[in-house]
Image (cartoon, rainbow, N blue to C red):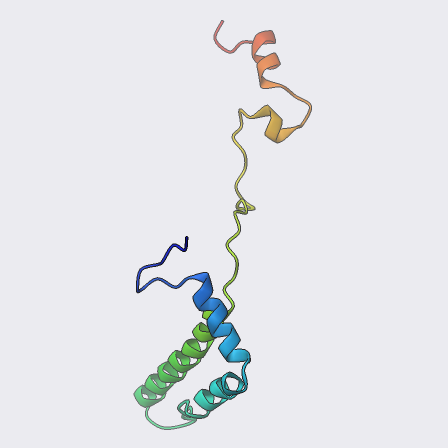
Length: 111
């Protein structure tokens, strides 16, 4: 039984279909054709016009990058944050040869 996604949800089969299309002859011509119509950056003129055009170009390139990202999504990994340390009371996680349970029995803080 196939579980269908909602209309607005992007699923793995959508990504596979888009990737297959982009690998076809037509798909190989699509992204370069889109890039041809990207606005040209201004090298001089009114500052506001230059800033607006820069934003248009950035949006255009972002759209092309989004198409590629939709076709080839980065797989979600459940990696632990590199800066996140295990709890201080988890002796097994620290594996430093010292045991908090043993230290608590030998030298209690509150006798």
